[in-house]
Image (cartoon, rainbow, N blue to C red; front, side, top):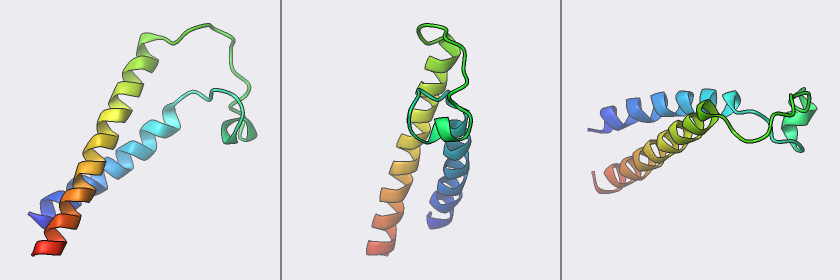
Length: 77
């Protein structure tokens, strides 16, 4: 069981890093420092951006569940 959650945690961690890096910079902060401030001025968010947000939040929830589950398994095992 611990091995399953460890593998799932590793995969969700890598996926979460990739998904966060795919997000468009909103201005200010670190994204401008690395060239994120040079973006088009299209208003609103596209369907792709909203789907990316949903996938990122879902992956973050899976990551959090894995962390809690592993903590409980190590504590009571």
